[in-house]
Length: 305
Length: 305
Image (cartoon, rainbow over all chains, first blue to last red; front, top):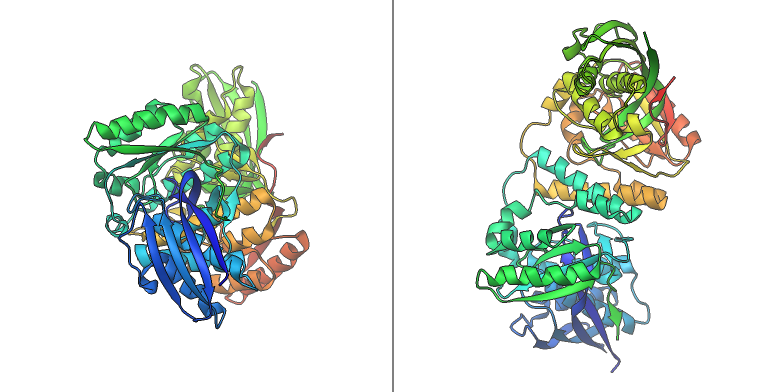
């Protein structure tokens, strides 16, 4: 039986200015999927190991399983068995649900005589992730597929944004679980057009800063007036952690994906490392243990192992 | 008495994806201001000529007058007299209010021993335009000052976005007046977060397309799900005019600023010219005369004459 393994990195969704449509890959954490090609025409999730084990194993309820079901549908007569090695904690805001789907798809696609194109993988990965999040959005799966900072539209291929090579991220993951569905529920309700304008300015300035390799433009654009204010209360100590990042020279700081992880961007690796320690310390001041991950923003995407 | 004249071009505000924060200059229409330096410490609007004459002449109610009052405040002992030659029709959605303010400021600033920096001019121009629109936004004044396509944040210097040199715009101005205030009133009410995500995708893809000189990305991004649906009914024939643009190969089409002018982007001058005629014909089919203006998107900004 033909088999392949693939790794998909963790990622930061939203990146403050781009709710549901901007994300970047992270180096140093991720999920691995081992996929076997079958002729069953269906999909089985045969094992889930690692930092998370308590996940649905019914294919259509599992993000990797649902993604592979979509792929199997496109190649009649083909089926898959998948084992997941989870390296991304559940409900951490690091895209764990997405990473399993992406790793499984990349491994499975490498086994096909006629692999599907990127656009199809992307769409299947979004469908897979929706099994966990309840909503279709590409801000985690797109950077996992392409690496780096990526514009993630709901339709069509995602677009990688070039970033300065010294742009670094510090992500601090506090030791508690915030369910994606709960985090999304906090966003219900009506929004003001004026807030959209302010947020759009931020998105445009941050993207301009990336293209022009201008850290000051990135700093000017880095904001979240839409989502962060509604989610901040779900994360104990958030204001202190963000303050610690900014006091350590961050270009900006916000919630990673649906939280509770908090991230910040820096113009050097050294600043990101120092700030990461200060941010973790701020979580400890509200009695939460926390792990730190420092990564290039231009981190690599998924790969066959 | 020292005097100077300056010209400021018309512009397209919003550019579909960037309500209140993105705009581009237009070649072929604009306002001219003739400014005399005085020691009165105040500002007088001494004449208004051209395609619009019926405008307030009290300095604080006139967009150029209000902008110059702001400049005079920064240079104690200095005053200005200004004559305006209006080349931009009133209530056309081509930034006429903004152009008078920008032309006056650029002329006046050239007369000062210590000119103010761009950031200050930009802020004063936004304050001036607010005399007419009732709201502070830079999507018209920023491209008038810098030329080309410009990100216009409410704070700090605007940022020019490089565009393909063959990116052209056709603007069609129907012969009726749509007051900016009425056009803004149509936007009241609540908005959905989902619509903002779709709009943000568009903004990001369009900007990516400009930086990467990729017309297909610009086409993918060109949309307005936020503002156009609420304003379209204020413009007779809008749907037909937009359809005529798209049928003629437009990358996208939407309302220019607060309307009623409609614009579209093209990947060549020839397409823009042909489409402009078709768009004007569509306005005629609803009994509206219309003028066509074809311009590079990278049109020049304001200049001292």
